[in-house]
Amino acid sequence: MLQSFKLALRSIRSNKMRSFLTMLGIIIGVASVIILVSLVNAYMSYMTESFASLGTNQINVNVINLSSRFVSADQMYEFYEEQEALFDNMTPMVNVDTAVKHGSDSMSSTSVTGVSEGYLDIKDYGLVQGRNIQYSDIVSRQKVCVVGYYVASELYGSPEKAIDETVKIGGYAFRIVGVTERQDKESMKDGGTDDFVWLPYSCAVKMSRNANISNYIFTIRQLDRADEAREQIEEFLYGIFKNEDLYNVVAMSEMLDSLNSMIAMVSAGLGGIAGISLLVAGVGVMNIMLVSVTERTREIGIRKALGARKGVILEQFVIEAAVQSAMGGIIGILLGSAATRLAGAAAGLDATPTPSAVLISFSVSVAIGLFFGYAPARRAAGLNPIDALRSE
Amino acid sequence: MEEPLIELRDIYKVYQMGDEEVRASDGVSLTIRRGEFVAVVGKSGSGKSTLMNIIGALDVPTEGEYLLGGEDTSQMSDDQLADIRNRMIGFVFQQYNLLPKLNLLENVELPLLYAGIPAKERRERAMESLEKVGLKEKWKNLPSQLSGGQQQRVSIARALAGSPSLILADEPTGALDSRTSREVLDFLKQLNQEGNTIIIITHDSSIALEAKRVVRIHDGKINFDGDVNEYAAIL
Ligand SMILES: Nc1ncnc2c1ncn2[C@@H]1O[C@H](COP(=O)(O)OP(=O)(O)O)[C@@H](O)[C@H]1O
Ligand SMILES: [Mg+2]
Image 1 (cartoon, rainbow over the protein chains, first blue to last red):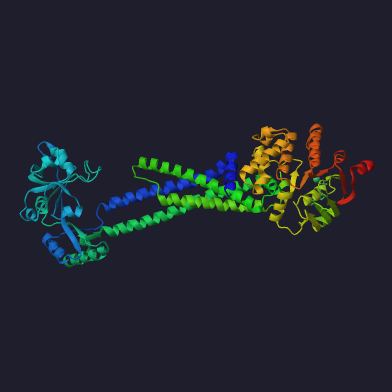
Image 2 (cartoon, protein in one colour; image 1 turned 180 degrees about the vertical axis):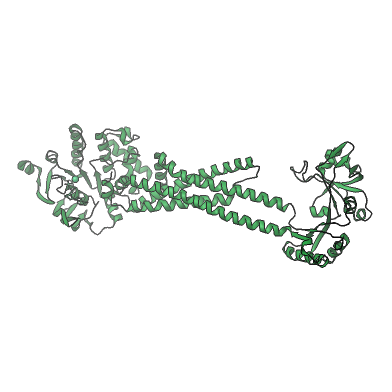
C-alpha cells in the first residue's frame, strides 16, 4: 500500500504535464465551487444580518387615520396592555422631518423620532450617559431627548459634554438627558445607526401637527407566536377601521422566513451548478486516465510479465488517480479560498470559504477521481500480458 | 533422477482466424532440465514466440499439459501465473522492455518489488545484479541514456535479480549490432556456466550454435532436437 503510494507519486512526478492536465479539471471544479458557494453565502448572511438587525421580534403597524375612523395612541396602549402575555413592548413612532442644530452647527442627516420610554429596550441599546426618556416626560410633554453617540460627539465633542446641553429641533430647544452607546464601527457616520435623536412621542406628535399617530412598533415575547400576534393586531384594527386597506401589519420574522426560503432556493440552485462543474471535472479526469492507460498499455504488459498481479496494477492506477485528484483538490481549495477572500474584499463582503463547500467539493472531487480512475484501471489490469506487450 | 524444470506434453496452441485455424503450436513435447542452455530456432512464423509465451507462462496452451518446476500451469488463474512468472522466470526481450520513466535501479528492482521483498534488501539485490552486468555506476540513469547493448544488459540484470529458475530470452540480440550481440551472448554463456538454465529463442542458426542444445521448430512442430554438434552437422 505504502509502496503503491510511492509508486503513484513517482509516476505523477515523472509525467508532470499529464498530471497537471488531470488535476486542472479538479482544480477549476473545486475552486469555482468554493468561490461560488462562499460568495453567495457571504452575501446571503449579509442580507440576513442586516435584516435581523431590524429586529426579528418586531411587528410593524402602519395605519391611515381618517377623521371619521382613527386609532389613538391611548387606544393602542389599551390594546397592548390587554395582550401583555403576547407583547413585550410597544412604542409609537413619529418621524420629525427637521434638521438638528446646536449653535451654528447643523446636522440634516440625523433621524429625529418621537418614541415611548420602551424604545430603548426595543432597540436593545444601552446608555453611556444620563437616563432614558421617562413615562412622565411623555405625559407632561417635557422637552427632553436621548441622542445617539454620533450626534453627541459631532455637536458637543463627547457624550459627557452633551448631557444637559440643549439641542434645537424644529425651532424648539430640547434638553439632552441621555446618550446611547456606540453600536459598531460602521455606525459612526452621517445616517448611521448612531445618528439619531429620540423625543417623547407626545412632543413629536405636537410638532408634526397631526392629531394621531400612524406608525407603531410592537415586540413579541415568543418568536413562534408572531403569526398569532399579527392576527390579534389585525383583528383589533379591523374592529376600528372596518377596512383592511386602512392598516398594514408586518411581522419581521415572517419576512425573515420568506428570505430564508429564498436563500434555500438559491442554495439548491447553486448546489446544482456546483455539482455540474464537479462532474465536468470528473469527466476530464476520466478522459486523461483513459488516454494514459492506453498510452501505458506496454508498461502494464511489462509489469505483468515481471509478475505484477492484477490487483497490484489496479491499485497503482487507482492510487495514482486518487493522489492526483486529492492534490488537485487541495490546490483547488487553496486557490478557491484565496480568490474568495479577494473577491469578498473587493465586494465589501465578509467572505470566508464555507467549510461545507470545501469539504463537499473536496470529497466529491476525490470520489470522482477514484471512480473515473477505477474504470480504465480495471480494463488495464485485466489485459492479457502478451497483448499488452505487443502494443506500441 | 532430478525432475525436469520444464515439461511440455503434447502442446497445441490454435488461433482461429475467421474460418481458418492456425496451429501455432502443433503437438509440441519438450523436456528441459536445470542447467541446460537451449536454443529454440526456426523461421519467422514457425511458432517460436508462441512457444516462448507458453514456456514463460505468459499464455496458456489450447490443449496439452505444461509443467513448470513440477507445477501444472494449464489450470492456473491469472494471479497464479503472475506469481509463477515472478518466481521462476527472468525475461529478456528483443526490445529490452525497460520502463522509460524509471532509472536503472528501479527497473531492476521491479521483479523483487512484485515478489514482496522489503525495500532495503530489494535495493541491495538489484545493485548486485547491476554490478554483475557492469552497470552499477550508472544506476541513477534512465534507460534512454544508455546504448542498446547496455540496455539489454540492464534487462538481463532485471531477469537475474529475482534469482529465477529459468532465463528466457526472445531474440535477445535482434536489435543489436554484431559486436554487442557477441557481448550479450558471451554473457549469457557465462551465466549458464554459473549454473543458470537458459532458453534463447532466435531465427539465426549462427546464434543457435552458441547454445549446448538446439530445438528447431517448423510449422508449429519440433523437427529437430539434439546436441549443438549434431545440429552443426545437419546445417
Ligand atoms: N494472437 C494471434 N492470433 C492469431 N494468430 C497468431 C497469433 N499469434 C501468432 N499467430 C500465428 O501463429 C503463427 C506462429 O507465430 P509466432 O509464434 O509469433 O512465430 P515466430 O515467433 O516463430 O515468428 C504465425 O502464423 C502467426 O501468424
Ligand atoms: Mg517471434
